[in-house]
Structures are given as structure tokens and as C-alpha cells.
Image (cartoon, rainbow, N blue to C red; front, side, top):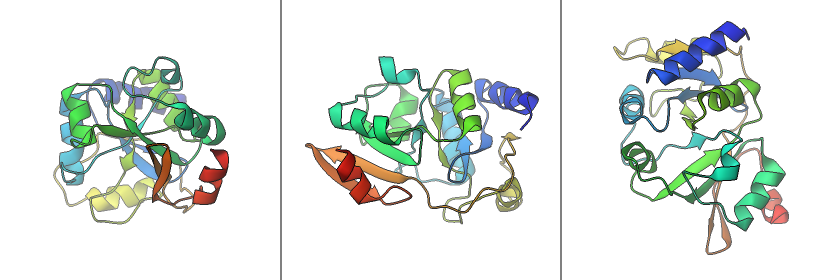
Length: 203
């Protein structure tokens, strides 16, 4: 993947645009999670119900200052064991901005992850803010594993992503495991590449 392509993708994110990008599971749609207009554009583009939350990828440096969310001991154990990797962890939301309220869909929580895929990491770290990690598809349609699949889904719609960061054809793997820890109890919301057994063993 060319450096110039990543640099262009970062410019698009900073300008409030929507970027299609590869992760360790499938292609995702990225916007600056702190930009309300960009988040609205993302929901509109996907045709996503505003009542559904959207998860984010965090810059690794965010883990030290955590200005957007709260991390307890159990969450830190999972981060140390499985990140970078296909694990999304639902945590309490600290940020009070309008964009975060929209992303959390009123749940007061946010799903965070840090994928094992350099382009996704670079995008987030270069922006210096969390980016969204919803799948790059029209709501209700299939997960996409190549830029051509993404373009095909959005072909008939007027609103399209602003930039495509092409990482080639990805392996067809399950979406990330989603876990919540409520009152120190583990709740698996979606089992993916990381099993419930592995989660519980890590804790």
C-alpha cells in the first residue's frame, strides 16, 4: 500500500470525509469520531439506524490518557492479551460531545478496538483521534472483503464514500468478537475469532 494513499486518506478524514479502509477482519468505514457532521454523514451513507451504536478504533497512545472512555482492570487485561487483534470491548463513555452521543446511540457506552492491521493503525494514529470501524457496506447487506465489493454495494446510491484505501482482497474471516464486562461479569455480545473460553481464561 502506497504511503501517498494513506496520506490522502488522512487528509480526507481531517476534512470530515468518509474513508473505506482494510482491517484485520473486513473493510470498514472511517470518519473522525469527534466530528459530528462526519458521523452524521456516515450514518446517512450506510443507511444505518441512528438507534444503533457504532464502534471505534483508538490510537494506541489514547490508552494512557483515555479522554473518551473509562477502562477498568478487567478491560486492561483483555487489551494486554488480545490487542492488537479482533476484539471489540464495550466500555463506559466519558466524552460528552454530540458526536459521541450519536455513536453511542444513547447507551452511555462505546465499543473500542485496536486491529492487528497496519493501515488501520496508521490512519488512527496519524489523525490522533478515534475513527469509526463500522463495516463498509450498506446496512443489511453483506460484509465486504475488497474495494470492488464496497463500490458495487454503493454504486446505485448518490452518497458514496469519499476515498478508498485499497488493501487488496482480504481473507474472509468473522467480524471481531464483541465483549462487555458488566458488574465484573463477562458478557459476549458477538463471538468472532476470539472465543468466549479465551476471554474468560484471560480474566
